[in-house]
Amino acid sequence: MVPEDVQGVAQIGSCLGDLGRFSEAESFLRRALLRLDDALTHYNLAFVLTRMGRLAEAKQEYELALQRDPNHVEARMNLAAVLLRQGNLDRAARGASHACSRSNRKTPAPTSNLGLTLAQQGHLERAAREFQEALRINPQQQSAREALQTLGR
Image (cartoon, rainbow, N blue to C red; front, side, top):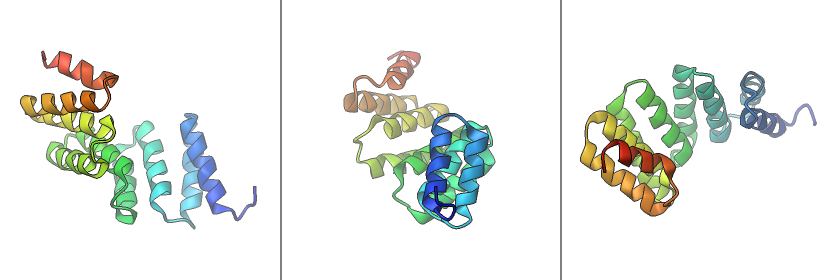
């Protein structure tokens, strides 16, 4: 590795995060962010911080990723999940809905996350429709199937 290769440093951080070596990943990603202020690196750091249970910091990094790339569907989806865990249901629902529209409903995860958010808000009929849509997109989507069973559908 070339010491000045900031992309390489960011990639190592991402790989360490994928391996579950979160403390090491954080160190590499923060080092990369000193010279590389891009959406992907902020997203990767947010993912690592989320896995470490540091939700307030993760929220901030997801927001920075979205400032750099408003179309980053995974950042929007994961931000909605963090907001849901923090109890900010209205903002989580808006974010999940926006992630669904950006993904063009081609993948089930944003749709399933929207269903979870709606269920948390008590909108059970709308939540069930989102879970059914997630299963239409991918019939193997286990979390949507389980959520529908929980809702008695």
